Length: 231
Image (tube, rainbow, N blue to C red):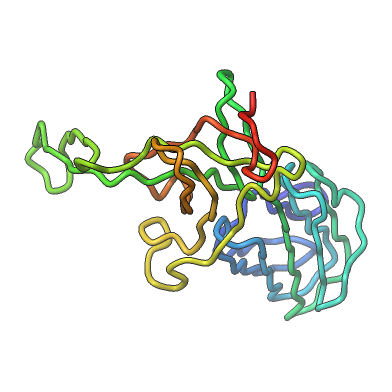
């Protein structure tokens, strides 16, 4: 979006902006797989003196900004802040924004826990069978009821590390480059959970937007090495 001083990148995603700013016409391309990666790359096509401001999400404690591969120290590069880059831009200048993050444990009102990493909330995908209950006569337009596949396990309890919440799961690459990311998510969270028989299992959670039938919040226990149920 345009501001009095220049441009503000409020949301991140692959796109191209062409606008008048800094006394001339500038085109800025944004390349990224965000929210599935933590790096956003901007390229300036054109020249002019203006501010390029970048929104820093509240979950990012240590953003890294580089201009033409040189680290840039700028005010506002704090969680929830707006980092400002005011300079004489030249054709071909590049800006890279890195938004490193850790796994976060989110608590529901009933004490159950969900896991997030960066901008994504993660969930257990439950395999389901769908039954069309109403067809509107147009391809793709229908009402469908979904039920878990018989025997599908979804009654899990998360094993959390209360001393180091960020160690309660680890981000792993999955299906990288294999298609539309919301159908085949390129990232997952590897977690440890107990099944309904209290047997420890390795579980992979995927971004909630990649699921249809899912479980997002779970009961939680203290990590097995610490023992005891968490309250």
